[in-house]
Length: 316
Ligand code: NAD
Image (cartoon, rainbow, N blue to C red; front, side):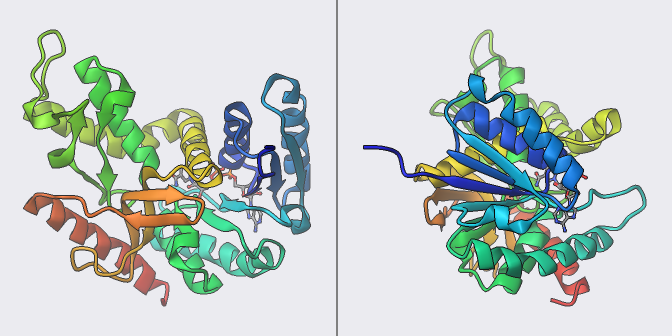
C-alpha cells in the first residue's frame, strides 16, 4: 500500500528552518516539504540548493515561497521564524518580539493548514508554545514545542562520551524550561537497563559528583558556546526536529521530552514545559508520570515559575 502523502511546512528558512528541511530530506521524513519565509530571496535560494540534492535522498519534493499559501494542506507546521536573543536583550523582550510574529502569522496558517499539528521551535520555545496555544485555540495535543529534545540529546552525548557507551543506550532526560532553569533528571537516568547511579563497569568508568556537575553545566552553556563560535546552532536542532516530525508523521508513539501545556502535573498547571511525553500522529498523546527525587521536583516547580514570569510579563 502506498504511504500516505505527508506534507511538512517549515516557517522561517533561516539557519534552523533550512537545516530542519535538510535533515528531513536525509531521513526521508515528509514526502513534500514547503518552506515559507518573508525573505523571498533567502527562501528561494535555500529551496534551489535543497532541490539540487534530491537525487541523493529518498523521494521527496521541496518548494518554497514568501507567500503563505505554500503551506496549504500541511500535515505538520514547524515554526522557526523569529529573532535570536541578542546580547543585552531580555528574555521578555525576545518573547514579545517573537510572540508578535506568531500573533500575526498563526491565524493565517490556520486558514491554510487547519488540521495540522503545530510544532514550535522559535525561542523562548516554552513561552512561544503557550502564546501560540492561546492565540490559536488549538487543542493542547496539537500544539507543542521542541522543548528539551535538543538539551536531552546534548546530555546523553556527554554521559555516553564519559562512560564510553553508545549514545543510543543512554536514557536520560532534561526537563523543565528549554533554557537556564532546566533540570537534569539524574535519578531516573539509565544506561541500558542499569540505573546510572549504580553504573560501575570496568573500562567504562562511573560518574562522580564532579562529572555530573560538569556535564550539566556543559548542557546549559552549549548553545552559548556554539553561537559564540558560528553565530547559530543548526545541525543538532535540525536532526532533533526531524526526529519529532518522524514520530508524528509515522505515528510512532515515541517518548520525547517535548514542551506541552500541563494540567495538574505534580501540582503544576497552565504552563508549557518539557517532560518525557508520548508523541504520535495526534501530537503529544500523554505526558509521562516520571518519578523524581525531591530536588528534581523542586527544580521543576522553579522552572515552571520562571516560564510563568515571562508569560505574565507579556500580559497573558
Ligand atoms: P535566523 O535569523 O537564521 O532565521 C529566522 C528566519 O525567520 C529568517 O530567515 C527570517 O526572515 C524569518 N522570519 C522572520 N519573521 C518572519 C515572519 N513573520 N514570517 C516568516 N519568516 C520570518 O534564525 P535561526 O538561527 O534560524 O533561529 C530561529 C529561531 O529558532 C530563533 O528563535 C532561535 O532562538 C530558535 N532556536 C530554537 C532552538 C530550540 O531548541 N528550540 C534551537 C536553536 C534555535
